[in-house]
Image 1 (cartoon, rainbow, N blue to C red):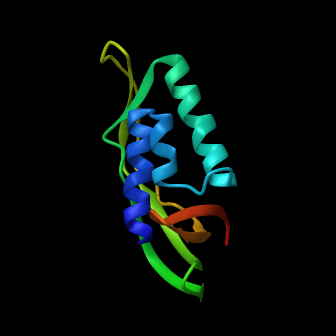
Image 2 (cartoon, helix red, strand yellow):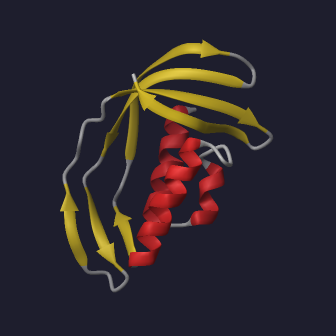
Image 3 (tube, rainbow, N blue to C red):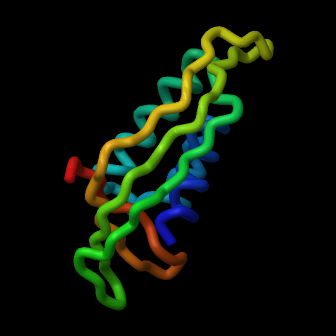
Length: 120
């Protein structure tokens, strides 16, 4: 479940699509606000992330229920390129190993979504 959300989160950032934020985050949540801010910034500057992938690993369930869950995990970020609207590569970003984080997830009619992400 967390990896599926990581894939969707990378797709939101890669496409700079505000409409896709709801596929990842609980509307109005801290994660939704952050993603929306990031996507607006990318779109305003005509940028996108090419090749971005997020990989969740070391997932550990901290608390779980039918409608809410808290997990701890690392999310590594692949190398990717920052590309402008003309397809020019402006920057190459190296792969990074993410820190351990705590993810709060909420299950709604459309499935699991992120509510918050904090340092573990």
